[in-house]
Image (tube, rainbow, N blue to C red; front, side):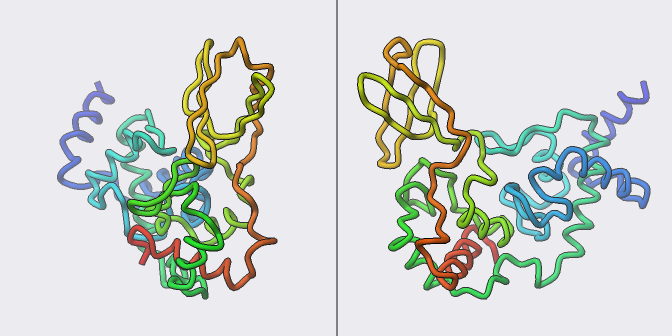
Length: 251
């Protein structure tokens, strides 16, 4: 009965605001956050492959109701999973996230990189060749993550992604190698079942293989993206990070 009452209270309160905002709620929310959220968002909400929480910018809404639903239901088509827990747990996590937002300062801005976004865009689109695999706005490839909202990530994570792209690889973008009929193809997996494997390569081409004809289907466990520490100067890396920070409301 108590859980049913909490469920009803949580659902009816979604549009009125968070009903769990006391000091004890926030402390409990912090513990839940560190259990469920820290791997993607970082201990303090400013690192990791998840959205940067030391900011009030949210792609999927900023109200208590919108953020409650984002945490509870996840974001389809992204790495953000649904948190299948009691509504009270979700509300308390949100209460703690609000304290992270409130403590954020200028140093937490994705803009604080020391680079120049205009120069970074030139490198991103030119020398870096990033649009071959990544989408930014309406342009680019699909082999890598969509960077249209890269500004919601931390600058430290963006820099690390350029220098060591295999350190944090989303499962959907881990490399796969297929050897079949005397040829070898590397790409990211689009679909796979017991009969076929479909890959997308760096040129945007789709390859379909029957498992019966494939002598090897190898999951590489790493990104197919090159590390830019040898091909871009330190200043160019800083410029690209500054450009990425400017995307998707990163200011």
